[in-house]
Image (cartoon, rainbow, N blue to C red; front, side, top):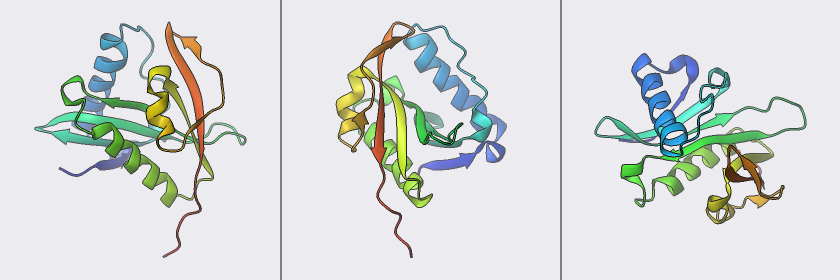
Length: 152
């Protein structure tokens, strides 16, 4: 199946349930990190995911800026435990970045776990903060300048 891209309004109930379920499995249960996973931003986001055999194997959301001096961000980036090591993370990021490039955004930010910073660097992201703890997990904020969108 190809990559799915949908706004909140276009998600079916089953799709929304599956998205919230996999995000909770990865970010709350697997990482043993109790926090409010449903943060009130999903309604503003573009959701991108891939399924295999009816299960989400990779997911992220594109989050619009809240303030004029901020950029769009790529958030809740995940690959399910069973699908790791199959290249889905790279394909997911490429899909997200292509989408943002089509929107002609000047730059993209992300709030990533520190152990993934080399992965994000491979796309052109650069660190803009030192490593810090959030919920006892090392994180780093990164930004990538986007190339101008091609006009067709």
